[in-house]
Length: 68
Ligand SMILES: [Zn+2]
Image (tube, rainbow, N blue to C red; front, side, top):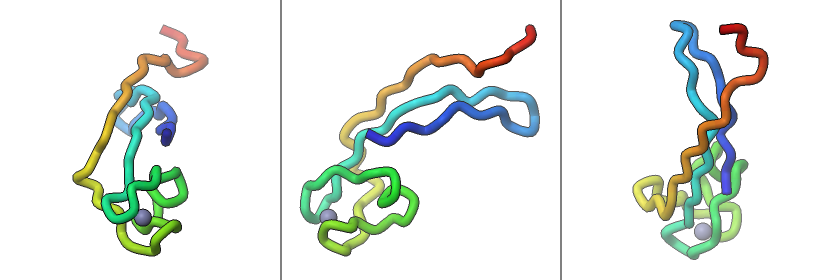
């Protein structure tokens, strides 16, 4: 699973933390965070297909230190 950390955008909108589960379309191995960033599967050295999302888990973890 790849955890995308919550962040605050420049317009003040909060983007919640969420996790994505991806599999390489070529070899079926799980795409890790490093491969997600690079766009290339390190197991078979082929670009994994971003269209093949196997699961998206959205969590509603709020940002720490919110004052309002
Ligand atoms: Zn692969």
